[in-house]
Structure formats: C-alpha cells, structure tokens
Image 1 (cartoon, rainbow, N blue to C red):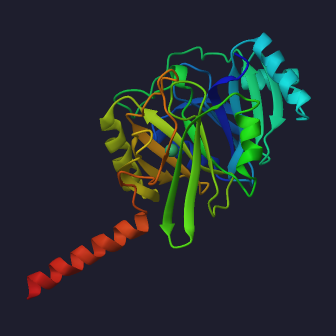
Image 2 (image 1 turned 90 degrees about the vertical axis):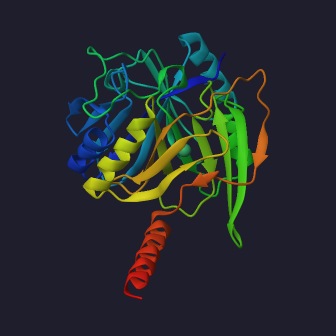
Length: 312
Ligand SMILES: [Fe+2]
C-alpha cells in the first residue's frame, strides 16, 4: 500500500513553553520525552515522541508527520506526488535525526500545512509512564490520535485530490449541520487505518490551522480525572462532555495555551473497510459538547432560579 498508514506525530509552535509543559504533562497526562534547544517533546506511548513543541509566535500546528509502511511505499508515494505536480523534498540528516525516523520526505498540503512523510519512527529507550493516568493512551495501529484542520477557503475537491487521491486516505463520513440560520458546519472525516478518522477538514470561522487534536485514553475514568485536573487548574474549556454520532467518542474539549483545542476522549469507533458504509450525518453531537459559555449561562440561570425559590 502506497498511502500513509498513521498519523505519527504533530508539531506545534507555541509562545509559552512552561504553560505547555504543564498543560501536556500535568493536565493531560502525557510524558515529557526530552528537552530540546527550543522546546520539548511529549510522549503518549512507546514512541520517542508524538508531539514536538517548539517556541515561536505561531501558536498553531506547524507540522503533521504521517508514517508510510516502507521505503518502497514512500518511493511510490513520492513518485505520485511529483507526477501530480506537488513539490517534495528529501529530509536532510539533521531533520531525520531530530524527528527520530529512518527517512523523511516533506511536502505541503493545499491549505499550506507542512506534511512530513516518514518511515521507521523510533521507540523511546524507556517504557511509557504517565504520572496522571490510570490507564494509557490509545495509539498502536490507529496512530497518535486525530486532528481536525481548517479548510481555509480551499475547496473540497482540491484537498481531497491530495489527501484521498495521493496520500490514500479513505472517507469515513460527512457531517453537515446547520448550527444557526446561515451558519453550516460541513466536515469530512478521513481514515487511513481502523481509527475512525486520523484527520478531518471543515470550513469554520477559526483563526488557526488546526481546530483540535484528539487524545484517546484506554480508561474512561481518565476522561473524568483529566476534566477535574483542567477544571481545578482553571484551564478554559471549549466544550463540555459529549458524544459524536460518527466516531462515538465520549469526550470533552479543553483549550490549549495556544488557543486551539484538545479533545480528550474514550471509546472511539474502529472502521472495518470491508463492511464500512460512508454516510452523511446531520448533527455533530448525540448529546453534550455544549459551548462552555452556554453551559455557564445555564448554570447561572439555575443558581438564580434556586436563590429566588429560596427567598420566595
Ligand atoms: Fe475530534
């Protein structure tokens, strides 16, 4: 298979390294991989790193690393990209060493996101250990997690020609929901392994390249405990606990120190390509995932109601 097989790692450029280390390790339960000259890496499993955090003004996603099965598969992919007129560059030895892979080829997707196609990502020298989690993170054949990226005005046909036509992603499903009169969420979810989606794209009013990254845990109690840690630390939430109708993820969304979100979830659905049927769904959530501002307004209204009842 010449396509990509998993989302291997992501890189974020962040303005506050200390906040991010606290957010990643203490609140989310990731493990510090290693300190870099200009940042640090984070682990969620046996791999050397899954997130690469470097200091800079972007406060956004700066690289997505996708693993390819073999050297030969990467050669085939490079030939397809080149034939389609997409520029690719073989990674230099310093970058290959820094990413802890055997080989790396970089390119850019139609939205301008940097993509690294890698072979042979290394494991760390020590087993994964989290000080915060009861269980672990769900990675393995499903890769690091999933991310939702902004289409940024690029039409679907164009980015699907790249992600489906060249990188080999398959469509999982589409969700179209009218959130308010005239405001329509239209997201397409793509998979490259059994995880319901490794990447999704949508057109939303959002200042970043990425809307969120999803970390999945093996123990549902870790969703609740991470929620508590974020709440007690005063980390702002983007959405309350809820469940999506397509991947069945039980999750909440917390805002990162850089302004985009992390979805922290459990119980994500796996896809069997032999039996999977692509559907278009009409809602983003089965229940929950309320914007935090709305939740606080409801709570205040409930408290005011109770106070009035008490005084009447
Ligand atoms: Fe998600």
